[in-house]
Length: 201
Figure 1 (cartoon, rainbow, N blue to C red):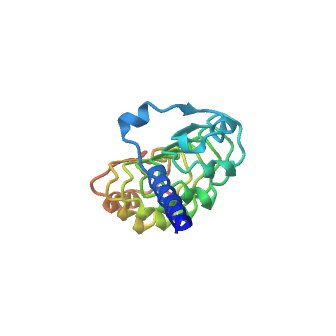
Figure 2 (figure 1 turned 120 degrees about the vertical axis):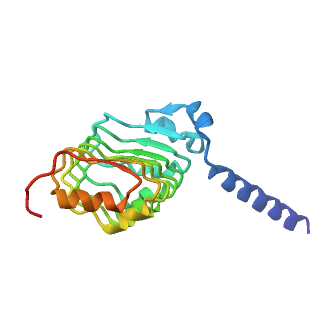
């Protein structure tokens, strides 16, 4: 009987810890958190890491160890040489801000649509040619920065990003017709374009 009580107690403690570890910090609490700039240091106490900045580290790929940081809310991987965003990015379910600008990304994994808490996605100065339809599941996304990419495919499913308020698409060639179509997908968002072109679809 005593053994059963001990097991029950451990189960309760484990569940409580799991629930706590998945709690999002509000903006005030988040602003007081340490910004980790060294992955090895962050991994020493992974449950306490909410902000990780690995910008300008000459990374060619996303370190798989990042996915151990389950409480991450802000991840900055900008100004590297990353060519691919792993499908495992969806393991970071608490992510609110993901910065991937100034890399060599050509596409995004469909699993990025699983990041339901994401409010900011920075993709400026990459080589992205198409967006996955699954991004339409990003219901809380407010800002999408994509200037200076190679984007030519914008799926209709992106209309599901109904919280979007700003979409930066300058530096990408679109016909006037395509610009109008993109605007119609998200009529409540401010979409920024360069002047339209007479280029062929």
